[in-house]
Image (cartoon, rainbow, N blue to C red; front, side, top):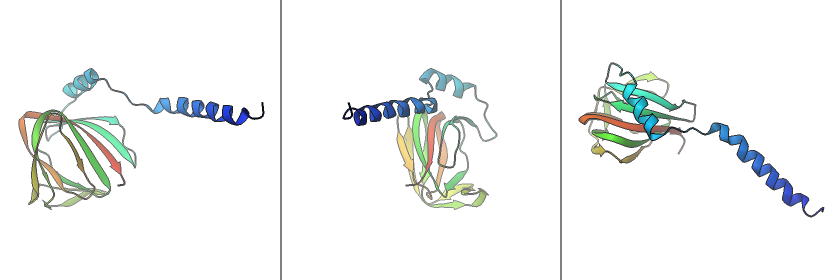
Length: 155
């Protein structure tokens, strides 16, 4: 019986640890994502936004629908991971921001990008933009682009 105790304890501890983390699970069905983004109000730059995972110092997840280009931007410490759900755009990456100004700590915005590389994004495309890399939706292809951005700090 003494030999079984070390085996039983890790199993009980593992089960308790796994059960404890289920409260942190975030789930949105595809139907919910579609319905929510279609009814979200657009701001003054043609962008509708829903926070799927509220921003913390280390991460966030945002569902976006854009009907017009926005500002060019650089994030000092945040990496972006994009997944395009529908529509498309021409995304500029690299180069330098035109009219760069810090809007909030670690967030620099500008009117456009000079130089850089154009990427034609469409449904199903996946992209990672490392911290410090300028990026800008230069134009919308068709009527809109619907995409998810996951932001995280670190490498």
